[in-house]
Image (tube, rainbow, N blue to C red):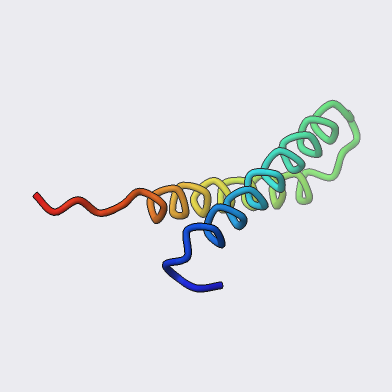
Amino acid sequence: MQPNDPAALARRLTELREEHRDLDAAIARLSADPVCDQLQLTRLKKRKLKLKDMIAYFENKLIPDLDA
């Protein structure tokens, strides 16, 4: 992926958002289970937060720099 290719950044952003939604659903299912593995749940939540940060990074990369 080229660092300044907007199309590639947009594709990567779409992939990250999809993974974030999937993790959200998985976390919801695990949270509803009274005998769920808390360690796995914690790891999924950390991964989801990391994805959120990556999404914000790529969104910022897509915003063009404006010289004042």
